[in-house]
Image 1: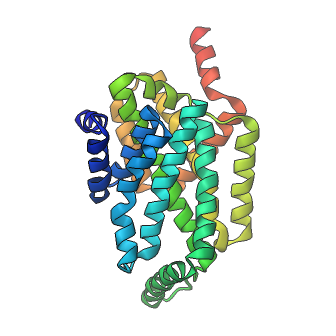
Image 2 (image 1 turned 60 degrees about the horizontal axis):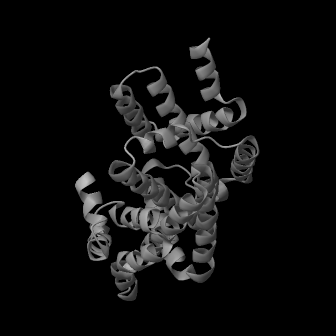
Image 3 (image 1 turned 45 degrees about the vertical axis):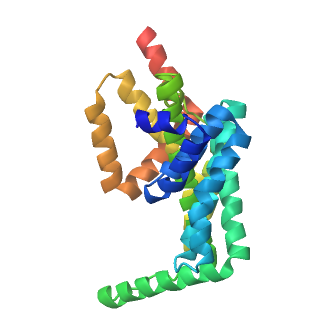
Length: 285
């Protein structure tokens, strides 16, 4: 991965080449854009972004059947660009995550309003799949609406953007600030007001019903990442070793729903109670 990061930073042509061909691999293309923005600024990042979205625009122009997801991929690259710029300016992961969340919400609403045909096609495909599941299990299955699908697309955009920005920041740390990303990520924690507003929005979405569940997952994403950061910090603090992190991520994959809820709760409670400071105080006492 270090060699790839060095290749990206070796010049505009090489960065553009990775951004173009990186579409064949998960996260590589948007992460390349993010790395260029983090190191060389927004203007240079915009030039590389053009190459990152080129094959996606061609797919859209060719009438690709999965048009909504292709558009979501385009929006993801743009959100990474904006998020990386925010991280550059504020030097704050929480600020960057708020920006990513806001732009992702806006992207989902734009897709619902301006790309209604693509969103509707995705809804029909999902409804057919759920209908088949209903016939097999003889159980009632929720039929998603365009609002549900728009929230799902916004969540995909935000999740992709966050993962790509994390990868870009890690690459930057490998090249120019060894160990810096680890310190930044372990310190990721929201203030009480921001965490409370995010948690309240999450609860409101879940109370409103299944139509808003995907939007709830979206607003809960920053707190989820804060909870993951707390787990990383706690494992490092206790000097438990990387095998515990491997076990944690295996559990996250196998128990995504329940464990995600726990991590969101941890992220919120940490913002209120500041577990990191409590751990540090216990060590010094």
